[in-house]
Image (tube, rainbow, N blue to C red; front, side, top):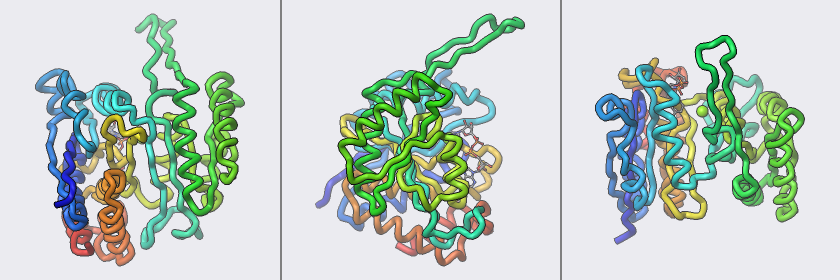
Length: 353
Ligand code: NAI
Ligand code: MG
């Protein structure tokens, strides 16, 4: 009998439950084939919960999640709840309380998927972003002053710590060292942000000394965004602050085919708390309830979860099935130019497995 894993599911709102429930049986199937077992616990937190209880999740939510092996997340947010409430009261507290300081976001053009970049193919786009996930621009510090007056102002403070930068940069360098090209691009903006990004650059330079085998370079984030479009083949691992990584990875998802394909992992590399796995897209209110959301982002997030749980063969089985279905190209959701629904797409992956 293999190991049993306890996984919590926060499916959330909009297409969150649609893609999460489509992905769960596939993740389960891959785990079972690898001799493991997953016990899923569903937590009905999100915007419905908010309307009923005045908060996105219960007061003891973090205590209930803490003993789990992993958290599988759909998406949160709905037009009838302010986005800063849904994000600040659900996703960000989990990422921060559980020290999920690495947000790992692969940006790879899968075979059979077309990119909006002319003349580019799968061999040209194989990047992964290591995004700082616990501080920086999303520290939540700041205030609004003189609200409603002509003098109204707002401050949003980015708080960067040497320790916070160092640990994510170290993770990114080790990841780069483990990949064939061993390249690392650091996203900075130290020409304009003369405090935070100058510290960022200093720490990157210091950590780089421990990884002489990695070829690295700082790029100003605006130029790096342009480079992702013009020369994606020159990029491998990208390490970025919270805000910069957020923006660069939506760009990365767009140039690798669709936001609906892209997975993300919120990792606690020290394994002191559970990590959390999610598609990078949001709740997509514009298509929610129609059963047409692409479940591949959630399925690939599940594959990342299996790998982090220590089931590499289950990861490979699920990932290969996804790639086979995309390569064949007969079953595609509308975001990929097809007519298939969420469940048809998931069934095709199940059959490929
Ligand atoms: P979004 O990612 O929900 O949607 C952007 C566009 O991509 C929409 O046109 C949508 O239809 C499309 N799309 C997204 N996922 C798709 C999928 N799986 N298949 C096919 N098409 C897909 O971002 P948006 O519209 O900015 O935000 C909507 C809500 O989601 C907001 O409340 C926002 O705060 C929330 N959000 C939540 C996130 C999370 O839970 N981690 C992340 C991003 C946004
Ligand atoms: Mg985002």
